[in-house]
Image (cartoon, rainbow, N blue to C red; front, side, top):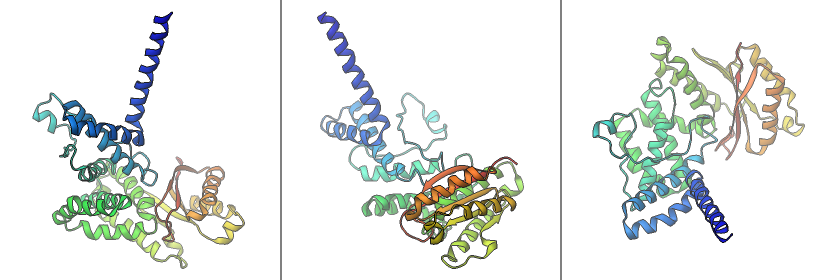
Length: 343
């Protein structure tokens, strides 16, 4: 009987340790706790396996916590948790031919620098999946750099300065087109349109243009046209916006904006007016409808989106996401993308 009890006790302890270790590897906050335990041991004993485990847990956890803070704002499918795999027993050719980037990290003594480098590398790999080679290089690089700087600034000023010195300044020196584009991205971002609409439209157009030689050859002009239209639109806020600026018909996508803006509609919870606007968008052959709401009206904006999804069958809710700034320039915000079902 005693052996039976000890056997079960051993199994339970093993199961707890196994599950605990698994959770520490997949949940960034627990992974950070694991790093706090491993890093001091690695620094003290400098044992190869401990050092590797400490580096892995420390860099993965800090990078994942930083990156995932923007996970809701960026397009769906772009952001997943970062995972470090150590390369062993491979030739130099195998290592450099698999298409992945190589990071130069200092094991335990420069974790701020490691966070900056790892976050930048992660964003480079994550942005514009399926369309990296179609999106113009300067727009792709500017989008990654702008987001990386924003990410570091969100954490603290020291990391922002470090990102500027290690990553941003060298990139700007190597390509003089990047900085002017980043300035324009900043304008869009101040009203929630950079991550809210621009990145999603560039991605959609680029995917549609992959096997369309005419549009693919004009992607630089199309990306600039998207910027022009969205800049013009937000520059009119909060004044009356001309009817022709509420939508844009491009070579691949046709999109429109819908702002949950009028206080009287919010006060009376009047979703019908927005459902009518969505039906008008269908009549105008709009494929992609962006709905933007202020942070203080988040619950009502969500009701509007759900109502459109239920009452306008031509549109399906593709994404709901948060913003760091709303269309008024205030902190926070809510948005959604509804996509036309197959015609």
